[in-house]
Image 1 (spheres, rainbow, N blue to C red):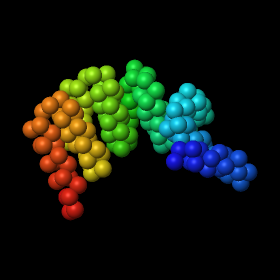
Image 2: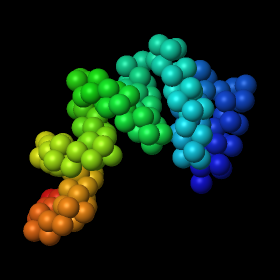
Image 3: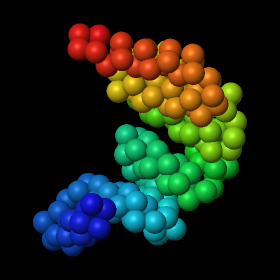
Image 4: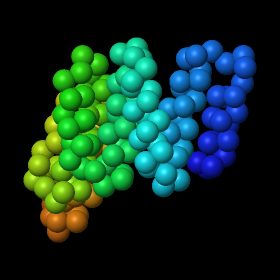
Length: 168
């Protein structure tokens, strides 16, 4: 649970033997736990503080993804959308796919169902990672069902099953 995780992260941050990298990772983890506990302002402050410390490019991308997700959870869709747009030009294909998924969630939260559909479809069609394809296809099925489009929902579920099937 998030409160237990927060206690673990706090212990890591207080450990005198912890390396700076471990302390940074624990701070990022504590921010994620705080966000899950509804303490979004505190989480955002931690993520922004970590970004100000000039992290490695890999760390920066992870923190920026966490921040964008936290902003969306907190209802700041505009700032989340800007963060996901910036991440969509990353050199890392994994970060780009996560940015597309985030952008789709932003679109969905703002009632832009067609845009969300297109972004989820893009992930389903382009991701080399089956886990992201499955996530996108599940979102497509849910979106189609919520829009009372059973044929589209069924097609998305069929694609999802084919993607998730052993050996696929």
